[in-house]
Image (cartoon, rainbow, N blue to C red; front, side, top):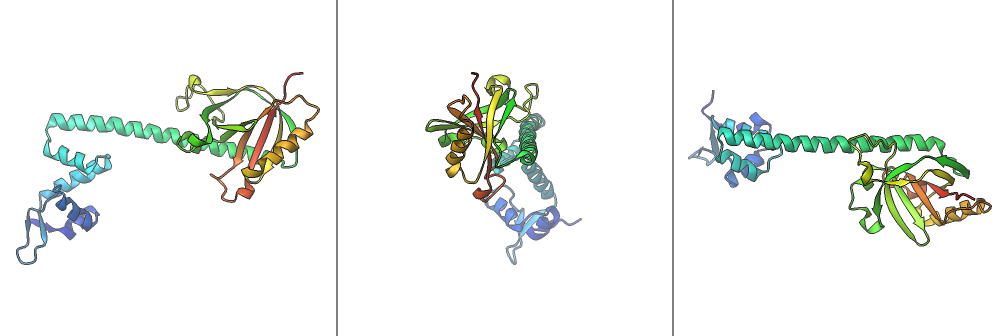
Length: 253
């Protein structure tokens, strides 16, 4: 086995970029044991491969370079065990977050796949629904800063000149630990709704409101409506192809 490795040989051994090893040298994380006196090339002693292996392993665990430096400079059995336990806990938390996000994405896909075949753009119908659940988001000003907006189908409530947003919990199961608990969600109460569709950009959606309300002029309708975004900016780049279902509650006579 070789006594020394050049920076290129060490990079090849660990499948890392030469510039990465040079940067580690620059910040003092992995300093070559000597330099070739003739050409100044970095030379690493054989036992430094264990240091590179440790750096690579810790990076895979999510450690920052500063955390790696502190870890390598203060290794003892007790500290190592403490570090690894803490990192394991963090990784499990991240893993659970990813599982929850994937679960939300799967429900969003199921929602689109279920709703699209039912779309009849020219039809206006009365539909009856049970309680439906959503996460209240609020006004458009805070909409884009919340993760739930991106991972769940979007609801938009319109009343008068105001609107507010929610994230629809499609097929909500309060026993599912990956979903918000019942005290964190709002309920769209069961009832009958006059339903129709808008095909196109949201800027022209008020024309669909008028068309649907005109169709239901003999019904006692609420003064608000809720929109379910079926095809929106997350699945379609052309806003002329957006499809939104508009639902207006029918009040008891």
